[in-house]
Image (tube, rainbow, N blue to C red; front, side, top):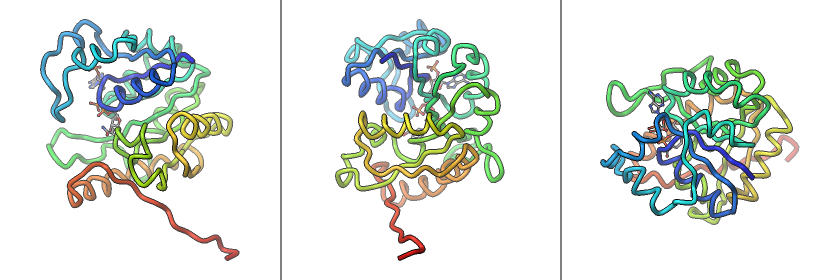
Length: 231
Ligand SMILES: NC(=O)c1ccc[n+]([C@@H]2O[C@H](COP(=O)([O-])OP(=O)(O)OC[C@H]3O[C@@H](n4cnc5c(N)ncnc54)[C@H](OP(=O)(O)O)[C@@H]3O)[C@@H](O)[C@H]2O)c1
């Protein structure tokens, strides 16, 4: 299947690698291909320059955001939160009718660590993306776990932990559920409801940041334990 990934950061890279290993035709999108390939320094998180990573993953195509968005039958949004709306609005015509798996979080690092949320409470980035692109089927997911776990949930307790979905289109959510299970190996997926439920997973980032500080690792997730009213 032709898949586009918008974003060359850690999230974009892990999804591109995994999906290519599964045999998909993956194109990763960036602002400026030449500039991205010329970067020679690791990023602030210590990830190697894109070109270094790309040498080891040379099957993955790289192109501009618009070429990538046109290429993908399904598109993954792995853009920096503050850049999402501007970039995605320009891609409206390349994305219309498609499923957009939205992994972004509305994090503002402008005042240092820990980041704050630049959208929260009664709004979310997921909603803003959906309202800006009404003909795109936005499904928010993966944003509550670290990039490495997103594509390899079995790294933790054989995937006995949870991930969430938010979105307005029922069929798109079913398709994404299938993908998350079959391609990535997730077992426990909770459909939270329409795209407004992105508010809760995006605000979870705040607890995620505190936990990663307290546990001194980004490799953790939550397991939801519950009983139904009938029990
Ligand atoms: N890292 C994680 O473990 C994790 C976990 C859950 C959710 N998320 C969310 O997933 C998204 C991707 O995270 P990430 O850590 O992989 O990468 P990131 O550094 O947040 O974003 C990288 C991408 O954003 C683009 N970008 C950055 N600033 C831009 C600007 N001003 N205008 C246009 N494009 C811009 C970059 O373009 P170029 O390609 O041109 O450089 C690059 O493709 C974020 O929204 C993040 O909050 C991350």
